[in-house]
Length: 243
Image (tube, rainbow, N blue to C red):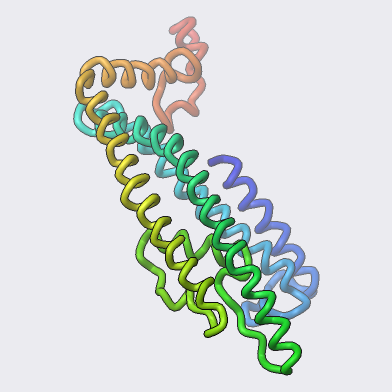
């Protein structure tokens, strides 16, 4: 979280300084940001905003850690943390399944794309593109297919390559069965199992998590909670007369 804030501030300073130096004034006009001469600094400003967005997101996740001191919200937070571990293990299995179908679809349509490009060049026709022409296009299509944001027109080919189209549809059907019906249901079962484990030992786990938060402020840093931990109280703890 702190690293994201530092990177966001650093990139913004570098980008703004470059823009101000090119313009000759510390006032930068917004209408000139997308000029060809200022695209590099402008991209630094955009990248700074991206890191800042991630930093804000991580800040709220860090603040939610303090919910463990509550007897009601703390159990839900513990369940969420245990579910996160299961999700990480799940993604290892899902990544293997996902990469297998991505490479298979890319290999299937590579011959069709190359042949279509050669025929179009020989006839001086317009070269048509295909979503599976590149790896990133295949990844994008199969990923959003998990949320039903894909159309069957993405698998269409010309009349001479219907075998590729039919094979692609069969692979997509198998991918849907393996990813949506099997793998996602496995994830739901894993999350349900984690919640049952927390609920079964909720008293012990809640007290342990709450004590761990308290011990962080007592043993490692200031005994006062933020923002009062900025006040130096070490001398007061050793000798109250020193205060």
